[in-house]
Length: 109
Image 1 (tube, rainbow, N blue to C red):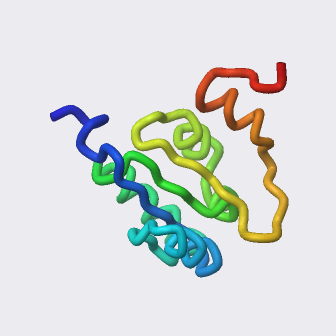
Image 2: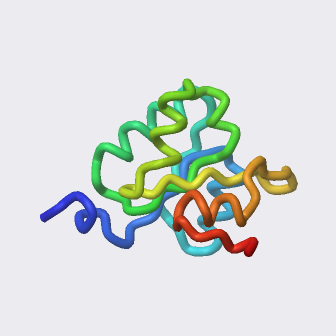
Image 3: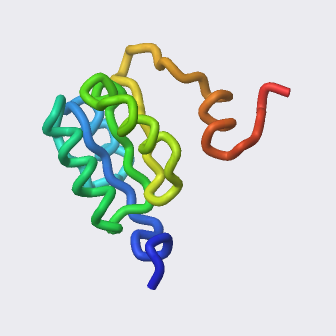
């Protein structure tokens, strides 16, 4: 079985309580309440495990990653790593920029 199909369809969340609780409310039961360096370590473990096809991570975790690691996670497709802002905070990346990065499609045109 190839890496892409192993975690097919499974989704998890890594982040503060506000993020993990929100995702649990919409039915994503695999959530891990971590922050800071511990969240980075958990992301590394889960991304290597091939258990998940999508991993949502609190955007606050970005500041604990070096540039190389952040660039890697923002560019891989399996698992797809999506950084999400805490509720009530503005995101650094617009929806159109995210679509262009992930899908290669410019939705602003």
